[in-house]
Amino acid sequence: ARGTTAIFGPSGSGKSSLLRAIAGLDRYSGGIVRLGTQEWQNAAHFLPVHKRNLAYVFQEDNLFPHLNVRDNIFYGSRRSGNSPAETNALIELLQIEDLLQRKPVHLSGGERQKVAIARALALKPELLLMDEPLAGLDQKFRDSFLPQLRSLIRTLKTPVLYVSHSGDEVAQLADTLVLLEKGKPACAGAIEEMLTSPSYHLASSKNAESVIEGHVVGFDAEYGLLKIGFSGGTLLVGSPQLPAHQPVRIRIFAQDVSLTLQPAEKTSILNIYSAEVLEIIPCNPSQVTIILRLGSNKLLARITRKSADHLGVQK
Image (cartoon, rainbow, N blue to C red; front, top):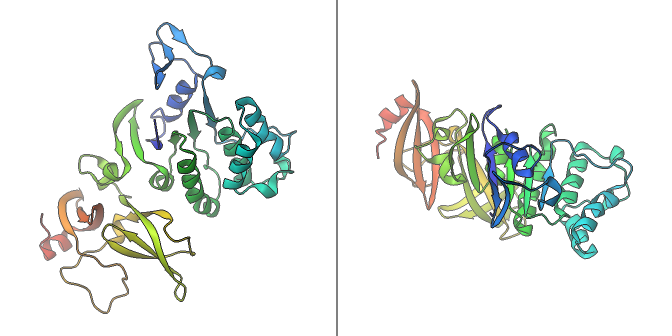
């Protein structure tokens, strides 16, 4: 168990039920739950919730209303034996030092969820379950918090099972993606492969996308453009300045990628690269998805069939 595994699928596919079964909140006959060498459930054995070394973050924050932020977080750390220094480091990582004396009623929805995540991690769990923890929060908060959450998870190295309906959250956080359909896993694999493989329906879906792992190499202050190095070159992205060498993940929608047979001149497009066509996938009567190799990455481009024929696109 390592990294973040996103559990993805339509409503009713069993995502939350899976997390509740792992946590021991629901028991299904014949089920087996095992973490490493620990058997939490089998036909003859069922370990109760309080004996499973995990933490659970729900869509609702479930904070103790009568305790301030500091006491809510330290409630978890006292149960786990976490030292005050470790808990304070967690508070610093989540940047909630200014909230410690407030009661939950005086926090915004995003602040309450940050505190709920801090309290969960203060338990020092072997496994963190997160069931749509950012649902219902405004997009501005999610945009700013997702990179912070990803960095936090990577720093603490706590394995995470993350349920979400949001493609943005999955693309930014997941290392592994599990697709559920009618209570069973339809497929699973590394996020980059799952998004771009012709074997799965994600590459031909309406919101097809790819992700690229890179790192900050510079910043163009005059134009507010972040320079991100990756295996295929350097991307220019409109963004606030970030520390040099900081890892970043770029999410690129297939509909935002165009193709040309020659290097474009006198164009507004800044990011232009040579790429190799790997696969052509029909996705509807008028469009195809082109799977490209760009450096060591795969990239999707969604174009019309007419454009593909006109350009003579082929493997």
